[in-house]
Image (cartoon, rainbow, N blue to C red):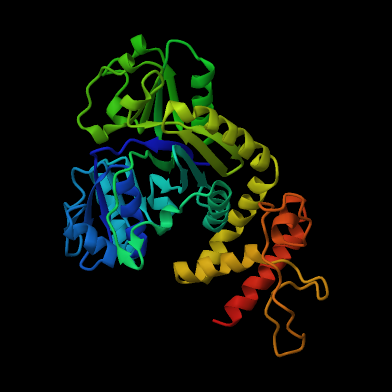
Length: 405
């Protein structure tokens, strides 16, 4: 499980290495949250080149070099070179001690994973499957966009096919932190329900948690700069200066805007985490209504089990398909499939013409548009405990697809 955090990026220096469509999405989301973005890539998409031309981002038109990651608050490696991405992570996180580093599609080389985001007016909703099923996360995002009548952040930057500016919308930057074995410090006079909630979340995420009163802390006994993040019930509790702003992530319960991040309201079902927040106090009521509605829909309805199943099969699927697109296409076929009632074989390709091809099945709704759906599909098999059937289907589909490669 990953820890949900909404980062304050206003006027903070962010680096994106890479110039393709994935890097483009990273840049757009960082600009929406007020980050000062630098791009390093010998080539870039039309939108990225346009944003550099009008001064919205800084573009170094070359390959990344040693020392390029120094001095940044957040770094994203989004090139198509595994070796290059690994080098960026090693320098940024291991050498320069930058806390927020993301390597696209390689969870072990990330300190945070990007979230799928939906915004509607002053409301923001983010979705994570803890890296286990990006395809499921995308499905839920698209459903929420339709439900709320929201414009997708993934379509921003172009109008009538031409690049347009991306403006700072004052949005927090939703991420999910990877805290396994990372040191986290909680400073509080007493363990209030809010403190207990955060401590529980930290431990669920595998963090090493040190909880103490502020007067027990000294620079010698509690080296704050070695912590990945610090949570304090009061702003005044953290009065030991840091060597740099990137030294540790900070959340102050009594002054959320003063920290580097805050923890939003959550809906959790296993590795599915949906967070809801309002940018303005006037919309808190609407945010509470949406939170309750989504909790009723997503908690204890099988989504966590479904995502866990996909996560267990994910390593072999990643090994079978060499490119991100091929993997994404396979996962889309897998979770979209509804078994054909006549043949009982779904949409698995037939060999040598021995079994007639059936009409393509209806796309699985994942219980989003029809909560009472009882179709024979992977989602329903898993959430109803029919794991043997789900595994048999997944293996057959995987073998059929790899046989064509």
